[in-house]
Amino acid sequence: MPRILAIDYGAKRCGIAVTDELQIIASGLTTVDTRDLLSWLKDYVYKEEIELFIVGEPKRLHGEASESEQLILPFLEKLNKLLPDIPVKRIDERFTSKIAFDTMIASGISKKKRRDKALVDQISATIILQDYLYNR
Image (cartoon, rainbow, N blue to C red):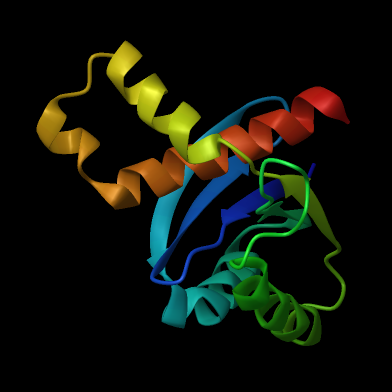
């Protein structure tokens, strides 16, 4: 069974999470420099069968799109041109960074590691993907 891959898109770097082959569990995979994301995805899709991309949709408290959305839309257009056979679904990502940080504290991760923004992005992508799996 193909996997589902989630992206927590950011201006500098993107957190990546992926499901197991049964699409039951979301796991953090890596963090990729945003400039390298499309080529990384192309390489990954060549190695692993991906059925669906989940991309976080940043919103403000009242539901309107945040300014980050203006960075994501051009990426989505390029992704659709590069890998047109893999659909993209958007998932509300409000509070995922806060939840990721709180999860790090609760799991006993040291203060030094909690400052690692790449780890926060990877955990955020995992939360986005797990949320999708839970609500589909």
